[in-house]
Amino acid sequence: MPQPRISSQPRLMLDTTNVIYEMADDIVPKFDDKGAQKLDRETGLPMWTAPMFGRGRAVGRKWSGQLNVTIVSAEKPVAEDGDRVVPVDLEALPWVSEQNGKTRNGVAFKASALDVVVSSGQVAA
Image 1 (cartoon, rainbow, N blue to C red):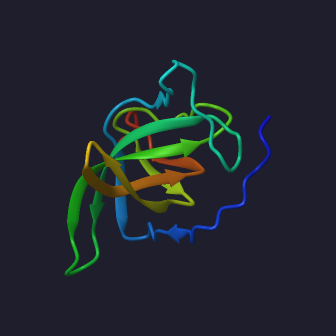
Image 2 (image 1 turned 60 degrees about the horizontal axis):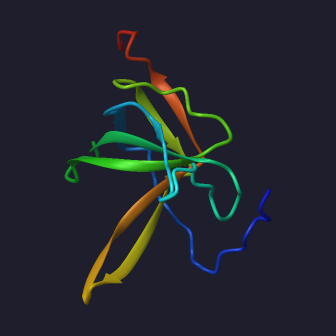
C-alpha cells in the first residue's frame, strides 16, 4: 500500500450546515486510463465518484447546482440515487491545467465519507 503523502496545499474545508445534498445518480469507482480504480495520493484508499445535487438554504444566499464529489473510502459508500446525504470532511480542491496551449481551471470536491440522512426509500418528515 502506498505511503501517505503530506500535502503542501492548504485544506479548504467547506461548511455543510446550510446545504441540502441529494444523490443525483449511483456512486461509481473512479478509474485511471488503464482501467484500474484510482487510489488517493494521501491515503492510498480507493476513490469513488458521487454525483449529487446541492442546495444552499441560508437566507439571502440560496443557490443550487450539481456536483461530483470524490469519496475516499476502502468500501463503496452505501448512498443510493435519491438519498439525502451529508459529505463528511468536504473540501474544495482548486485546480489548473494546460493542454494544447489552453488553460483550464475549476474546483474539485473531495470527502472522506457520506452520511445518509434520509434514504430514498423513506419519507422525509
